[in-house]
Length: 146
Image (cartoon, rainbow, N blue to C red):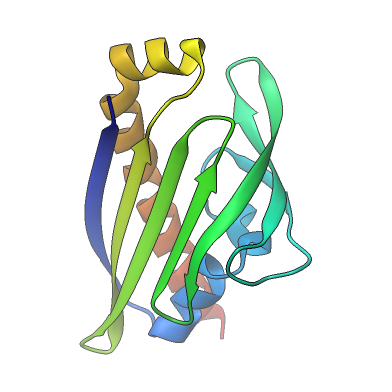
């Protein structure tokens, strides 16, 4: 059973500045809650990279797949260990950027299936909300500093 959350936000920063934060996984620790470290040497659609996230019992390393990377438009990432798919779609709007975020999970392990059934949608919605808030703050702070 898939659980998912979708949310939109407007960021008062040009599309390319928001894309710089979203489109390069190496910059995800700057704004994405729970993401502690990323190692992505070969940035292209279809590449695999290492990500370290804050888990329930401490830092957890994950193998991530960049399933979609459309310059200044869309990025989608799949985590095989958790079954989580994340997607951000960007649209230029009134001098800023409209961002639609989607987090979904199709759990494969028994533990993730139980977690998903009990708190999946609520967890995804909260994580997505914090992610978009942090992205907005990081992009607008980056713009103010420039």
